Length: 293
Image 1 (cartoon, rainbow, N blue to C red):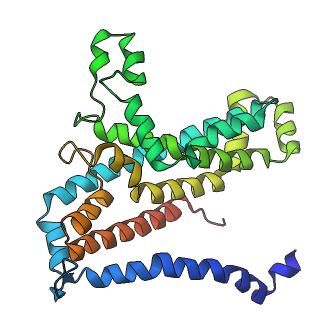
Image 2 (tube, rainbow, N blue to C red):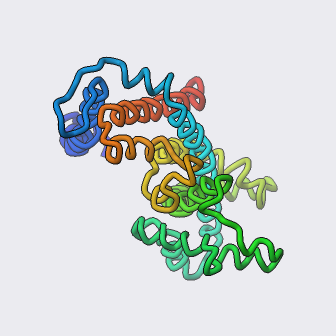
């Protein structure tokens, strides 16, 4: 295997298809967006070069953009916590299941393969007020006033509601990754730790979780990157409303480009999102990198 991997031609041959797909679907569109961001264009009339005017508007004259950026940061932090925490908990539970483990794996992973529209419809019914949805019904058993909580139309709750739906949908992906990492830990290490008295939470705190730290960091990077680009579930649930209370930067970009037909300005927002994603990933690696790793 090592001899095969040392063959640079073989490695390049296997990497080339993925690199080409990345260049065609990510890198080239980003370059085009960068070019469009210097123009004023509605998709119909002739493009007009305006230099950095779109970026000037973005940073200095658009209060809605800064509101969406703040919403995106809150959405990203909470979504990262939900997906990582829920995925890790489900993975740990799977390691304790001895019978019908495949059934539970399928149940945990099902939200990932369900269509976006179906997930949005499910959570719309869960958050429903009239008729009373599942969430309000359960809360109403505790307090009758909670039967009428407006989860999707309350400015203070709409962003949280969309974040929970997004986090729930993709937690299964990280469940699979964490589970694979946990069962890959050599059994000799676990047995040695148990002999030394480690058990329960201490076994995870001092042995298992530190051993899967690289996997943990990778998952955090993936969740952060995905959260900054999350569009479908939040948009289908709230459309950014009410007002701009749940508007994310990515949904704002979509509205500017395709609803307001400001392709140049929408492209400037898209470039900003891409640069922000790269910056956050670089900062994470710099923060988590240790000398000698």
